[in-house]
Length: 522
View (spheres, rainbow, N blue to C red):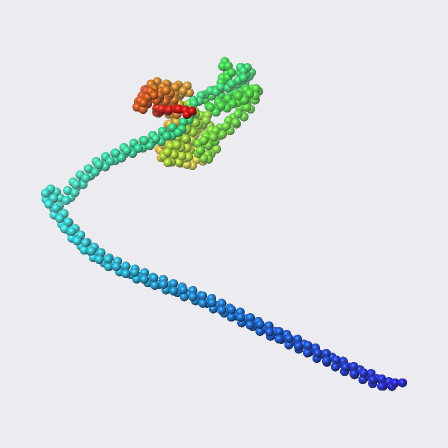
C-alpha cells in the first residue's frame, strides 16, 4: 500500500516540475518571438532607411532641377531687361539727336527771325518816313486847291459828298429797278409754271347737279299705289322725307324734287325700296324712310372716309369726315362741292410739291377749305368762318389749315403761303372750263365748237379738245403742212378761238405734225 504522503509529495513535485517546464517553454517561446520581432524591426528599419535615402535623393534631384529652371528663367528675365535697357538707351540716343537737331533748327529760325525783324523795323521806319512826306505833300496840295477854288475843306467835302450821293442814288435806283423787274418776271414765270403744271397734271370730271331725281317704275299702275287712297301715301312720304313727289303723265318714271340733295337722295332710295317691296302704306313708308335715312348717314360717312383716303391727308376727326361726306350732296353754282374740294386738295398738293413745301399739309388745307358749306344753313356767318370754327372745334390744331379755311376768300389778312395756294387752287377749280355756271349740254356744245374751230383750218386732219377743254390737240397733215406752216396754223387757231368763243381761263393750242415711213420686211 502506497504511502499517501508520498503520493502527495510526488504530486507536488510533479506540479512543480510541470510549472518549471511550462515556464521554461514560455520563456523559450518569448525569446523566439522577441528574436522574430527584432528581425522584423531590423528589416523595416532597413527598408525605411533605404526608402528615406531614395526620397532624399529624389528631393535633391528635384531641388536641383527647380534650381536649374529658376536660374534659366532668371537668366531669361535678365536678358530681356538688358534688351529693354538697350532699346531705351537707343531711343534716348535718338531723342537726344532729334532734340539736338530741333535745337539747331530753332537757333537757325531765331537768327532768321532776328534778321527779318531788323528788316521789318527798317522798312517800317521807311514807310513812316514816306507816309510823313505823303501827308506833307497832300497838305500842300490841299492848301493849293483851297487857294485855287476858294473853298474851305468842309465846303469841298460837302459838295463832293452831295455829288457822289446823287450819282450813286441814280445808279442804285436803276439797279434796284432792274433787279425788281427781273425778280417780278421770274416770280410770274415760276407761278405760271407751277399753276400750269398743277392744272395739266389734274383734270377732274364734273357734271352739273340738278335739283330733281327720277325713279323708274315697273308700270303706270304703280303711280296709283304711290299716291294711295285719297293721296295719303304720297302725303306721308312727302312729310317724312321733306321732298316733292311729282306724279304726272310721263310714262315709266316718278320725279322727286328738292333743293336739299341729301333729302332728295334719301327720298329716291326710299321710294325705290317701296316700289321693289310693293307694300306701300303710311306705316311701311315711315319704316322704310327711317331705315334709309340711317343708311344714308352711314353712306355719308363712307363717302367722307373715301375722300380723306383719296386726298391722303392722314387722320381726321370723324365729325369732320361726316361733314366732308355731306359735301357730296352740296352744290355751289352747279358744281359738286366734294369734287371741288378734292380737286382743290390735289391742285394744292401739286403746287406745294413744285414749291418745295409740305404737299400733305397743302392737301389737308385744300380738302377742308369748304367744309363750312356742309353746315352754313345751320349756323350764322359765311362758310369760311363756319368751317374754321368747326375744324377748330373738332380737333384741328394746325394754324395753316385753320387760316386757309378762314382766309381762302380774302376774309382775313393772309399770313400763310398755304392760304395763297388754296385761294389759287379754288379759283382754278371754279374758273376752269366745265366747272361752274354751265349745264352739261352747254359744256359739251362748247367743246364741240372748240374742235370745230380748230378743224376748219387747211391742213388739219383731226382736232381734239382735251384736259376738260383747257387744251386743243391738232393733228396736221405732214404732206400738206411744213414746220413753218404748223407754227402759223397754231397761231391762227389760237386767235380764232379768242375771237369766236367765250371761255374762262386760257386754252392751250398744240399742233402736232409728224412724218411716218412704214415698210414691211417679207
